[in-house]
Amino acid sequence: MSSTKKKTQEDGGVILEEKTEKKLKKPRLYKVLLHNDDYTTMEFVVALLIHVFHHNEADAQTIMLHIHHHGVGVAGVFTYEIAENKVQQVRELAEKADYPLLCTMEPDESEE
Image (cartoon, rainbow, N blue to C red; front, side):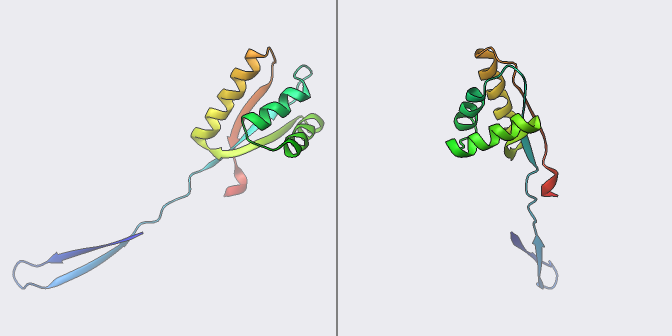
């Protein structure tokens, strides 16, 4: 984005133009992580991935199996406010269903 400013000198009527460049920085992104535990069902995790993170059934199954085998997996990558909201949604749904599912967020270092 650039803007042009015009200035006039009071005594001589000379017009000067100054151009300024505004560079917008992309917002930092955050990974929302789901952690494996021995109590939360695989079906519940798949349902969360579909409902909260809008994955299709096949992708949700793949992510759930990754979490199951590796202990943690990325449910999605978002701006800070959206990631924070997703973490809160997962915590509320897990608590309501009496599951101890841990959901956290961390900066996405792959963006830098």
